[in-house]
Structures are given as structure tokens and as C-alpha cells.
Image (cartoon, rainbow, N blue to C red):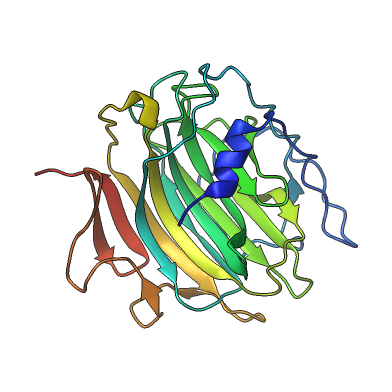
Length: 283
């Protein structure tokens, strides 16, 4: 998809919004400092999850960008999207160190997204994942969110992720229609952000590893293999989550049996569509 709102967020005066608030009627404590989780989630992410908490204020983005007002282009998406609407998605991404160049619009992300086409060329969405960017703290991998209410990247530096780590993420809603992004950290669900988006109680879901190359400084970007697994979908309207398997109507942009290749990067499905890898093509 064309991420015009993301481009707007890069070209605008970079800023952040307020930290995640507690869910309506529920007061979540601020997340205390902690280490990466040592075990997988024990239940679905929600304000009523045991020991659920809210993240600290996201980090302010740096405005030190290359001169000239470049427009990002050169997106390479590896992954899949649902053709129907769901109430959320969760799963695990491994973190890698790509050859993102400082002071460029290069980036690599592993992320989930909930989105809806609003018509007239407008798409509303919320995404969450990890990112390595060329314009802010290059060389570091950081937990982030992006939403079309603010059109801003938000980085959460209280969560120190490094190459080799694995992060559990959840993007979902409840019957109120409030969409939330969660990170499983310190063996508890941490609320990163919540947004009242015009998605309603369901949305199209994406799971992607995404690479962007600064078109004004084209070069080869290397990306070690990213592993994605345990991807589950939440039914719209509630009910238990289920693995994203072949019986879920899914869009990959490739013919059945054809390997997904984008700009020198390749995706290999281990189990369609809940376990897969993406990285540099080996041939």
C-alpha cells in the first residue's frame, strides 16, 4: 500500500503525542522499568490483563534530516494481509540489524497493522512493531507505533531491544472501537498507545517486514533474516483468537506457490500464514 501518511509524518515537523492513556473506566499504572520477557504471553492483551500497564511518554523524534526536503520512496513489503475484517492480531517478530544508513530515509520495520479504506484515497490505520531508521538514532532498533490520527512515528526507548531479541506485539480493539497497540515486556502487557480511529470494531489486518530505501541515495540495503511466528487473529466482535492459517482469506500479491520477492528480499512461508521468514534472497 502507498503509505502517504507516513511520508507526511517524515516531512512534517517531527513530534510526538501524549503517552498512552488508560482505557476508559480503567486506570492502568505506568509500566515500571524491566527487562525483556522471558516467557510468551499468558493471555490476550487487554486492560484487564494481569499486571497490565501503560508505557512511558514516547521519545521525541530528531529533526536532523538531510537537506533538500527529500520524499521517501522505494518501499518493499514482505508479508500478507487479510481480505476480510478482524478485531485484531498478535504474534512475535525477531529483531535484526540491517544496513540502514545514517541521515537518510532508509528504514527496516517488522510490524502489524489494522487499517480501513475510508474512500477518496484516505486510509486510516494503526501499526506497531520494531524499527531501525536512518533519520533518528541510526544503528538502533526501537519499539514504535504509527497512527493516522497523528501521522507521527512514536518511539518507546524504555524498551531496549537489540538484534537477536524477539518481541511479542498485539494490535486490537474491543467493543468500544478503541484501537490499542500492546507490547509484551517484563512478562506483562504494556499499553503503547490507544487511538479512536474511524475503523469501528473491525479492520483489515497486515503482517509485514518492510524495507524502505532512500531514493535520493540509492544503495544496496542488507537485511538479515527476520522470523515471524505465532501470528493469531482475533474475530471481530470478540471470541477466542485463532492462528492465521490457509483457511483465512489472505492477500499476498503473488500467485499460489510463487515465492514472494521484493527488491532483492525474499519471504519463505513455514506455515501459511502464521510462521514465516523474510530477509536477503540467498540466490
